[in-house]
Amino acid sequence: MPALNDDVLLRVASFCDIETIVTLMCTSKHVYELVTRYEQSIVKDAVALYTGYDSSLFPPSGAISSSHNVEREYLYPKSYDILNELKIRTSRTEIILSPGQPLRSKIDSIFSTSGAFLDLPQIERELLMARLKETFKVVDRLGDCAADVMSMWMQPAVNGNSSQKLDGDEAMLKIHDRQLAYIRSLSPLDLAYLFHLVSWAGQAYASENSALMADVDCWERLLAFKEASLRHGTIMLWAVFQPPKVKKTIDRTDDTTHRKPMTELARFAETCIRQIMEEIRIYQSTESSQNRLPPSLHMTMVKSFVEKTGRPSTRHAIEMERLILDHIRID
Image (cartoon, rainbow, N blue to C red; front, side, top):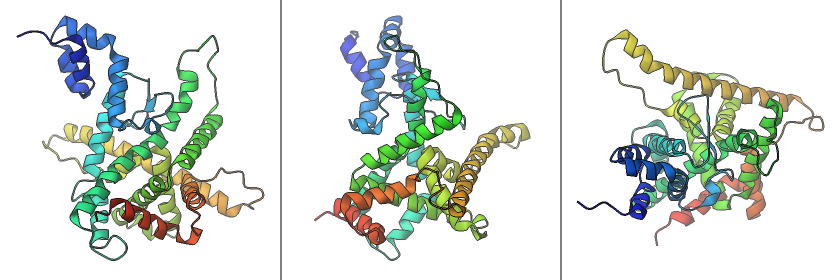
């Protein structure tokens, strides 16, 4: 069998996930050296395919944050680690939005109750679900602002300039500023889908945590969950909506190993929510003239939609519904 041309091999590699690329590299020394040598171009093509060639869905630096554990490691631009992370995100999105899962069940219930989305035709439901999957990428783009800021000191100095060091508070403010800027750059339609995704996720979160939502601070908790999802990306949605792991053995050691990641993720999500709830309390107890907290991402999302559309702020949810319905309508 004749060997494939190098250009063809590289083109094929750009459409492969990380496991397939590893398998491809094992076929021969030549292929291994070729795929290693062209790592950056392969990853660049794969990222373009993942984003639908929409460069705004990836940070300018090309770096993103990992979500396979709560440490959120910095992933260097155009590295094969990027491909592995994109595979994780795609898989989790499919699972979270699959039939029978909490978030999907909440969305399906909206289709069958009252409101603007009542009795949508099946094809329009499918279009809506497809667009929500793309909105997961928008949420992760917000979370990846952290990696974009980290690039300021993680990457080697460029043109003789030393990398910039920031302390923890400065870094958090920089990240928040970039998240605010990204939200303000979104179109009204993107903002509408983003608003509904986090709103429906909040409703599903409340349904899954009825005991927590019985507390007096339930509304602050719900807002904090939505804000945390915008700040940290879809790892927050995975932390609260991931399906329980099925035990394959009664061995206790094995069971402990399987449960540990879920416990870590649950602790991560609860910590993020409690931190934002504390911010909300500070905001509510402080005079507006003395309040130095930056605007929330959720508030900025709504405000940006109102400013871009000129619609009354009291009707933003209705106007967002109308915009989505117009977008998915099949005449």
